[in-house]
Length: 282
Image (cartoon, rainbow, N blue to C red; front, side):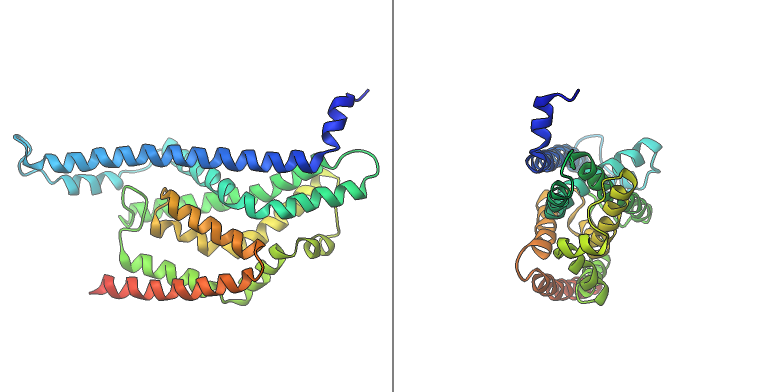
């Protein structure tokens, strides 16, 4: 026999789901803030080592060179796991707010479709499918970070060490904002009702709900992946930079005229990329 109190809570599924999304987002950002603070302390300590060059016994030691060599050290399995976890948490904090209209609509449609029972579980599975796609993207991003690190193209703060590389990433992200593929993926994200109708409506079965969540996540990755590359420009652990990109993603998907906002941002990114490359080649 079902618990009446639990059943009453589940009937407020959209409220529960909205609170869950908010809690996951806040926890993700708190983790990122803590990690960024830890990295900043370590970076300050490294700068302090560089300042020790003039101290007795430290003459002739190339501290900046030592720091650069440290960034090229091979990753252990633990290092890779920590970087992957960082990217996964970052994607939760950045992408869940912009996906919340779709997730809440899924719960609402499910409530109307199911006269008895609750769509709470199916909505959770839908959300899991969405996040799995971004976790797969995080795996690719971790590989990309490892390659850049091995090529000595990242600083200890995980930002580009090359103005030319930064400029190239900015131009790629900016030009992509104007492509038909970007427009097609963004249109799916901006019109959750049309997406649900095209995908066959609410799916209560776990496999169907998970697959639909992955499908929506794929459109979202297709829309936003070049913007995620910009994390290597401003710093993977630069909280302000992360927040600015997250706000741009949210504006594109949710705000009126979001597609125009994205194109304006694209033009600005291209201009900034050209400036970076020119300055890097001087």
